[in-house]
Length: 369
Image (tube, rainbow, N blue to C red; front, top):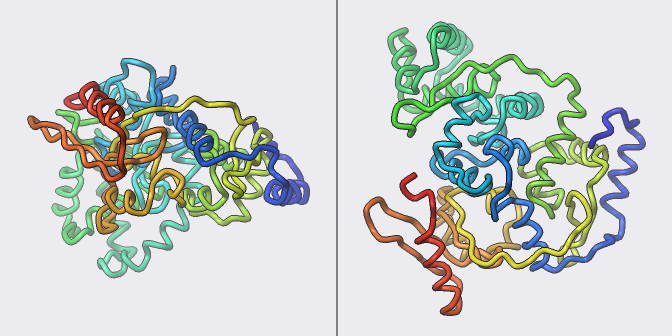
């Protein structure tokens, strides 16, 4: 619940109080992991795929198979990847670049809200790259006209979009085509929507004009969703995830009635609602690029330095699927098509836990889904 009409001075005073107040609840790292696990819906939920994403605002989505699975495991029992694709086909879910120059799965309304706050910053950050690629205003304007003309009749595959630009004399090699698509998505013109053919590729689709009627309330909803679906979180986590100024975010947090300040191993953190006892979660499998890792600036609560190195070898930006034991990442896993699962444990686990890991991978419902 937000109080978007809260006077600025009152909001800033409340933000300061939230940051400085002695936390009513002191949480250990283990307790914080359990609460995060429940907040992240890693045990599933009663929600549809669209409801899962709406609740979380957005889920990391540069790896398409990974985000489909991230949504499915958080949804109601029996949800398949086909169900998640159906939510995209129905227009309930979209995929675009709302933050950090990274693809996310979100809803049309939340995409518009996020881009309202991040779009200008993202365009400024990409300006140098656009110049280096030779994409001046004349080229961008011409590409926009060709794109709008093509999408006026139907959604298009990436190959079709690139071919239309090439036919119009607009070069797409060396990353120009990708940059143009992202540029128009950040401008709120297009997004990735329904799936084509086999379901491995999304179609570029025109985005509806959807400007938040109340920007303050929209940002408060974004902040509340982030905290609710990932808490406990620090203000640094929130600032890293959105890449918005801390002052703006603190005011938004102050307008959310049910934000609670807690202490996690002595450090202040936010969550929604009063902390409640949470049971140990046991073994959980997460897909590549999951929010359990990428939803936070500080990942030390859930993974050791050597585990983080194994999750993203050489810091190459490619995050592997992870194996959690009571919320701690202990290893990576993958299921090569037609081959036996590959498990690489980094942290030691007892034999009983290893058997539970083997069973979880054997029972994974989305291998060939």
